[in-house]
Image (tube, rainbow, N blue to C red; front, top):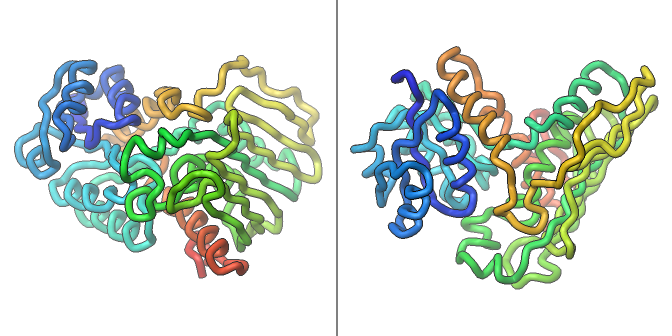
Amino acid sequence: MTKNMRFAIVGAGVISPLHARAIVSHPEAELTAIVDEVPEKAEVLAKEFGSPPIYATVDEMLKNGEVDAVCICVPSGLHRDITLAAARAGKHVLCEKPLGITAQDMDEMIEACRSSDVKLATVFQKRTAAEALLTKKALNEGKLGRLVMGDAYMKYFRSREYYKSAGWRGTWALDGGGALMNQGVHGVDIIRWLMGDVESVFAYASPLIHDIEVEDTAVAVVKYANGAYGVIQGATTVNPGQEARFEIHGEHGSIIYGDSGFKVWKTLDGDAAPVQAQRKAADGTDDPKAISADGHYILVDDLIHSVRENRAPLISGEEARKSVDLILAIYESARTGREVRLQPGGDPA
């Protein structure tokens, strides 16, 4: 690798400017290629971020581009094929959430990157938020005692126009799911990361408002491997959309936070809540274009240093898969009307 890591962005849609902004603002990164089958979209993105070369296909970019790593910003159902192509070409991968939409896809992606000795990192930027890190630290230190409940609420809004804006939105084949797999996957990842593996789920999920294939509203009751219970709610039907909220309750206290800061902080030590500047939620509750690029910068930085230090990325393919497996179990429960048990590590049993 040259002094700077050279990045290609595949897909010039809504999320790609966050990747581009993170890359061009990083002193050890360069944006050296943009790929999109629609030239006009690629040109708009390129013009805003230094006019790197534009390619119509991934194969063309991998053959001719000067690239060390690929940011995958295409519909979720296309993540597998692009990851496999990048790995075969010896390129590292930073994949937007969700990692994949089936267990087989994710297995193949992980194995391809392992076999080619390249890094596979995933964008779950909510893990980089100060509230998430401080909560994780408190839990690791046992400050709530035995955990009894862990809840995640992702009550967002998406308009009918949003779903009509691209043919892949709201489809099983390319979106892989709806309010949970697309918008709520970040919250699912956070609560599983904080609470640990899930033992079983029972769920309801369906399209209640929007004319789409996948769920726009979902509710799941979960039992964690540590014995605690919880609720996961995801929606794109709540108008106005609410900021994501996470609640962790233990025998000695509770922590509740959202994207605008801590709401409750009561621990065994009686320490005060960490001082966090109140801020407007930047999680795309109503508008996916409103998401902050700060977390993407951290994950770009982490990928660069994971390569240089020859270590696993902060959110590896193996780690990212666990949250998708939980969503797949929720879907199975909603489809069958039965409780679904997960194997240790995340796979539906």
